[in-house]
Length: 336
Ligand code: FA5
Image (cartoon, rainbow, N blue to C red; front, side, top):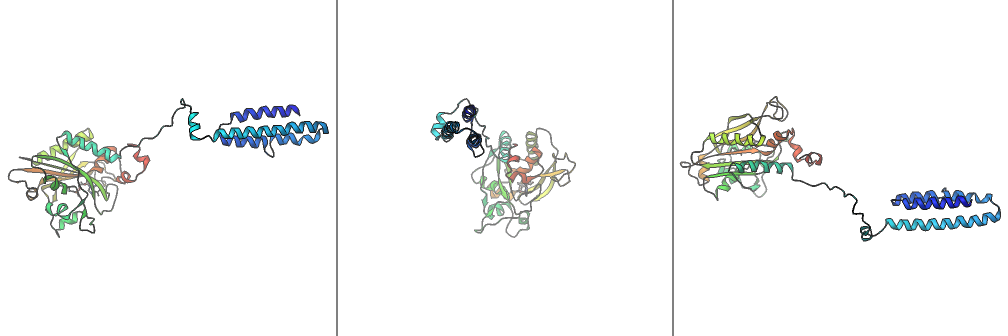
């Protein structure tokens, strides 16, 4: 019996010493001091001893109980040290926990890439306002009140008569209030349209507006600039198809479509099975719009374009769903 008590003392001492957490201690306490624990087991055997032995062994078992109780409370203190005490016991050789770093939203990263390319082509990059007046969003761009061309853009009007810009084109006029030709401008920014969304349409999306005004600017300069841009962006020659279209503020007006890089032109949900994706609206700045900018159309000419940033990015990264860009899913965003 004496050996049993001694062995238990040694074993309990070793295991309490090795305990790494409060949970370990709780388990050990149940193991050694619990109702069905090892000490209780020894005590249950006391009844088989002679009365003298029972007295001596009983005392030994009781003092072990006391001793183990003290050891447990001492060990528990170790795990409830104050911050300062813990810090003073910090093991500086222990490897640190890796912290995940945040990064810019992929659209912002991509916008910067687009800006860099245009800057390398000599463009000045400007910012613009998202809340506009109907005058700048429409009238000064040759779209008077009640003109059917206003239906080209489903507009969010605000209660105070202002609106959320439907395109970045009003910034052409605002930028020219403080500038004289020659100019080469790029104005990226958010635009808003009350539209049903699908794989390639959102109701809030980014456009990048280009405006170049100088002497003798022609459609050839427009096409060459856009080809240079696409080539620099995608790192390879891409098929560009200019098609005649109508915008009230350009004459002639062009819709620039590009072969769909997602399906290689075979047809998919992004290009609506056509193999081509509409990337940009563009054209030569209408003489009346030049006059609205206080630029003489007899002396100067210019081209302008406005494209969707998300579509450029979708083709670049092979993303087949525009809504992923705004979903806030960290698994998706973390890939960029
Ligand atoms: C315009 O917004 C004209 N302001 C573009 C322009 C500028 C023409 C200067 C001439 C001169 P449009 O509505 O077609 O045009 O939009 C231009 C581009 O924005 C489209 O080619 C497309 O790439 C993108 N876009 C249009 N609607 C959406 C949408 N709902 N979601 C995502 N991208 C869109």
